Length: 457
Image (cartoon, rainbow, N blue to C red; front, side, top):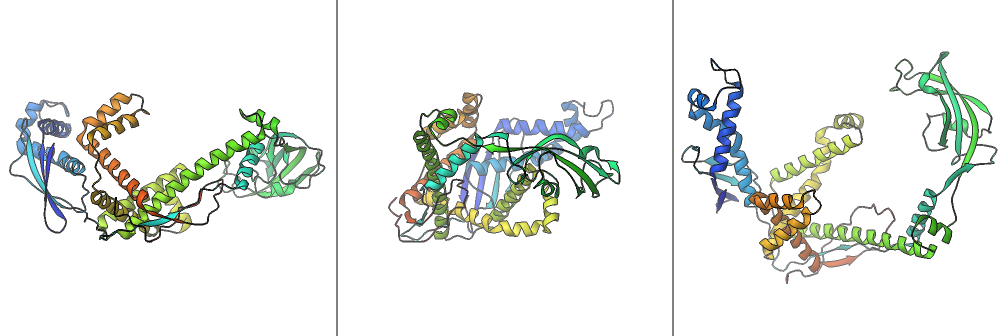
């Protein structure tokens, strides 16, 4: 596929696309096969009509129409990818003659593309640089979790059940005198306070002595396995058989030897600190890059097309639905539970979609401004490096490099990454007081405007 771009007024372009013989023949083959699925021609079974007969009976016009219907949008999309352009309007397609099997074919498409962002002549970037400091408390907390994981559950000599202990119980239940089969268990062990039992049962167990039996009224869930008892009140008889407690080892050299390759607790602590420091540094770097990108977006002057925002908003809605599905909840169920509509959720996600589109336009303009390019050697080396994780690295790399659209997509991805690397390098970091928690789950800091000069890149 060969493409050329002619700039027009008002952010419009005329894209000239020459489609190769292979693609044209492929489109005709598909068209004939698809039309043949429903064609009813005397003497032939449905879907079994020979191609030559179909061509004669249906006529070339119908086949051309089907070929273009099924493939023209794909060719246009590939051409836009080759030129690293995103359409923000429907294309106006034109051509001088219909495609012919065995011959290349050319069409043109006029379409609106996003405007080019501009920056001040003297571009100054600054952004908050998070601290990557790891506190002693974070190290202590990690060691305590490791200690907890190594703990053993041992019999307790306590005389009364309390939150945090482990209880071994037998229980049974009845509703209106009828036994609830799913509401009985023997030698059931759980941690008191974990919330694993129905509401009311754990409270009844607290204070019980081993060997004691209590009864408690509990409302069964409305969606239980036995519909006969859903939502009804059951009488549970609970016998506490044994109390146990978690016994954690001491944080000493013996503990270090037991759970790691280190000989002393000091060495283990140093390794924990190193791991937390690596994570904290990686997160701080990621947050800083995001802040620099935000600063680029804020510094750019550009009218973001609504269609760009709408596409990114759709992506975020799809992502939200997939995330809920992974947690076992349908998106419509979430909307019903929260009393929201899709429009309500879209309104919440819109600012992020708008910022994403603005930052993308800004980053592309910055890459152009700094004349950042990716040569073929760098591109091919990157593709081979990324393909190493695949089952057949050579085949994967070959497929990517053999596809002009895939090559240019990877090239643009690399170009924009290099552009952000450049912006990060010239941006003035602004410090902020921050205590890096072990969980490292806080959100990224906001970017700020300042006086750092990034114009000499």
